[in-house]
Length: 259
Image 1 (cartoon, rainbow, N blue to C red):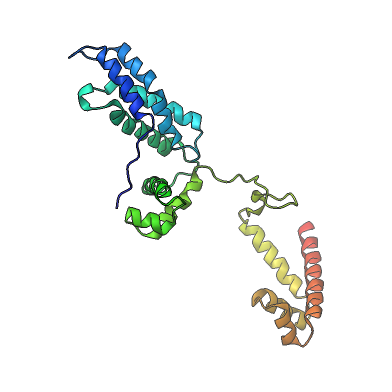
Image 2 (image 1 turned 120 degrees about the vertical axis):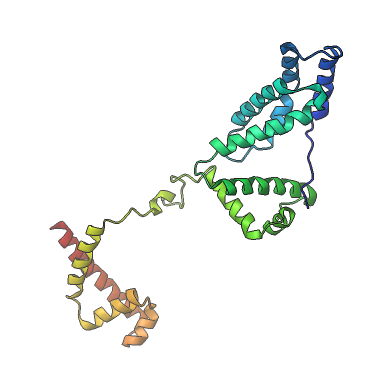
């Protein structure tokens, strides 16, 4: 099943205007530079309508219009009346230039070429289905239209974040934290060895029950309730034991790092 074609609302108006320009050329005469300039001026809205189709995808509309209008000039320079209506000739040229601009300049994080092409096909299919269904299509509906697997559609949709990724300064909570705060810096392997050595030494100062609690909580990842059942105390007592242990270990590590 193929996506239905879409016509541009200004195509007929443009073709009528171009037809008047061609009438002024006379039979059998080639288009002059002046005639082609008239065609470009008559088809500006056509170029803008093509650019409008791609707005909201990570590239400013003004940039898209500039690319589309430049492509319109190229189309007018190559157009021959015998090839058919101007809109039928120009629209694929303009669309191709806009898509090429996305491919070459629109990505902040560039995915593989195959994934870029899949995303373009998915986006086109989504627009077609939105008009047919009067709602947003599911990934499965898009996959059926394109004849591909649903996972391929979802993967193509995920790569859209490469156009306009979320800023690391984006707030996450009312306490002022931002997305960048959650990024872990690469560990220094030598520093890790030093900290582990000091932690091993600090654990020597715990008694047997405290070392058991540490192993159960941080080694076996048991809950405080489960630890309490193992050593015969309440969950609240386990919480107090852990608090005491972590404070003592932290003091020992701080003193060792400061030395």
